[in-house]
Image 1 (spheres, one colour):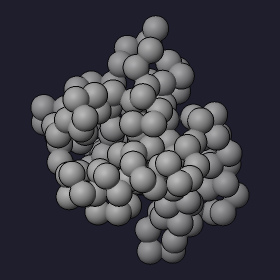
Image 2: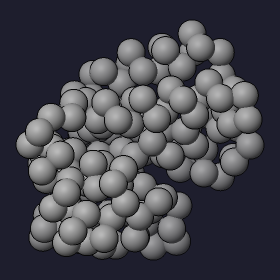
Image 3: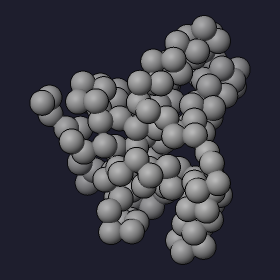
Image 4: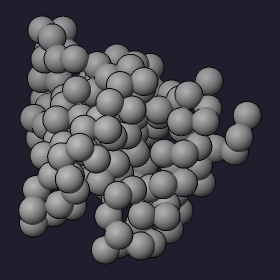
Length: 149
């Protein structure tokens, strides 16, 4: 099993009809991770997703649809912030220069023993702590979603 952490922007693109090419890629990854039970997120990602999903200038989804997405994503074992996650995020911030919010994402991915972190917002190809690779799934050299088990 290869747990893969999914950043907020990938979840949002899966619902964004305005960016068809990115929507197809994001949906492909989310479907594959759900089938294989390898998707991972954090409560931060759920909070950010809900805000983007219901914002009238962004996805503008009905609240009920965004809530249903968040409920379904609970199966992905969201990591909640605690003092240990904060310490890890501060370390990530110091060592790699991540923003606070990105450092929390990376720390949550590492806590869940993820080998990949799907994100459009961080440096594609960067390997953190010799075990987590940041992947922009929209990059021309990005790996494809895993095949069905």
